[in-house]
Image 1 (cartoon, one colour):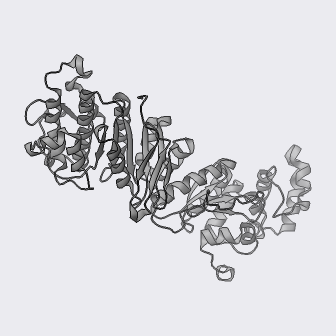
Image 2 (tube, one colour):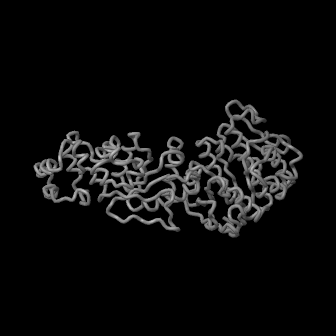
Image 3 (tube, one colour):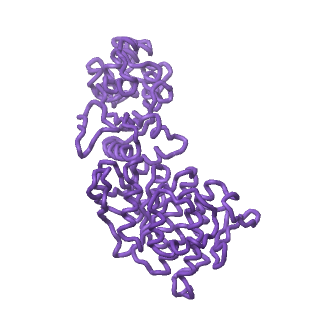
Length: 485
């Protein structure tokens, strides 16, 4: 990228958000600005545009106008001041005409310059659109209508949005908007180049959002352009991260926030964005809270509970202590995207470790920690409730385990000492599989047995005590135990 690129900036913040300035840092090649409605995303983008209007371009992809040339827009399309004046608000009544007219502006700017002088071929300028419009060919021309859009299937020409689907027309004009301004910058040999794109995902199917992400990253690399895209879409975020990897950063914007630091898109962001963004499981943003758990065993238990339909959660395993990083990242995502201040997620810890406290630097507003009231989830298997379902009292279970312990090799001594185990606070991880093999006539995995039990029974008695009131309240609604018995 250019040596004079900006990696930080200060821009004015409107009074209704508290005034002062936004301080941006950690800007990357591609930056995803996540923020809910009213957080100031559009104002921030326009303020960044105003810092350097000659080498930045703000795009509001309105679904307005037709793909036709309009001579009255030519002056606005040629000059950076004209483009700035056309994008002072979130609405442009003839957005598409302005994009098409800029093609003519591109040729006006080019004049008689040869291809060798401009470092690109105008005939090749639109080829990147094939990424988002694979069923079409697009080229630019020096005479009205200044573009040639044809369907590959039958070679027919398209000159009106009425011949396109909604998604196709939006991606066509978005792509042409980006490529024509990039072409003008190439002609003018502009150094630092910044595209500021405001919610391009509106009205675009998730599959097309993925294609658009591919297009954006391709343009960023091919034409050396920094991109800042504001969105609510975790699908678009996930796709940009997939294509751009370490070249992508996330900027979380909240209404009360003045310092906005870019965070590199890493493996945790990738998993969470995929989890939130898959268009078959959008529950975490709209209905079911996310339940972060510490590992695969906990995942098997709680996903079984979720499948029962009685506990409304989306479960994600986090590999031990990484749950803290997952929780912090998810907290950032929800605080930036969700206007619903109700609980959006939980991070469930075993009882054998301290629970991190909420601080100003690490709040737990959307995704608090909760903790089992027993050593770990294995202990739930030894509750009177679950043993009763298997047909045992605790003493009968002890007798059964001890009588068969010799069948389990080097685990036999630990199994013989089962009567010494503190059912709530003892560590039985090393022998839980053997205990389940001995006690369960159906030989179910212990995780499946616990999950099925919790999925069919709201916790009471010893099971409720081992799980803990905080977890019961969060997942089952906190009804009094007497009402659940």
